[in-house]
Amino acid sequence: MSEHIGRAFVAVVPPGSVLDAVGRAVAAAGDPPGGWRWTTPEQWHVTLQFLGRVEDAAVAVRALGPAVAAQQAFEARLGGAGAFPSARRAGVAWAGVTEGAEPFGALARSVSDALAPLGYARDEGRFHPHLTLARTRGRDRRDARPLVDALSGAALGERFEVAEVVLFESRTRPSGAEYVARARFPLGRADADAGNA
Image: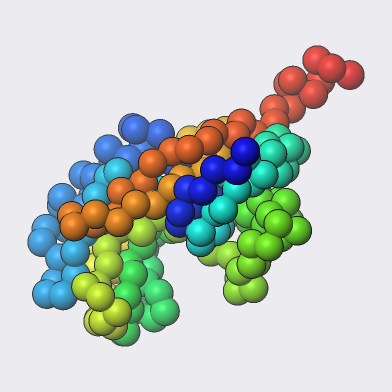
């Protein structure tokens, strides 16, 4: 039986200690400039792929499990800051990934390869792993340089292991988007492979 879960995306959530460090950096940056709002800690993640509406969650889950397990767990670290599409006229300000960008890209490609045959469109742009920290209201484009400057030198926590991918449902609420974890997928482990050799 198919299960419709509305809008969804696939992401990696850094551990709580790293998100706490991000929270300290955001607090130190103070109130965002006019027209900007900080995202909430519950919304902090590194998106691998947006899916849009998911008509049959079970099929997506069956495709994602083996694809994620085929990728090895890896180390990553957050750091730096930027904005999309440019710092002068942006809709999103983000924290970047200073370590682990290449395996993040491989993981995103694996997810995309698994879901493309099910009709989920690939993102044809260059994958840039990031954690969204601020958004403009509506579709406004505003100067993000003060935010980028405030966040660029901030400490964003220690190196962490990327060992799990999460399928989230995105629910729209008056207070903003609410993300609900619908399925979790572990990455493979080199030590487990060695034990099976």
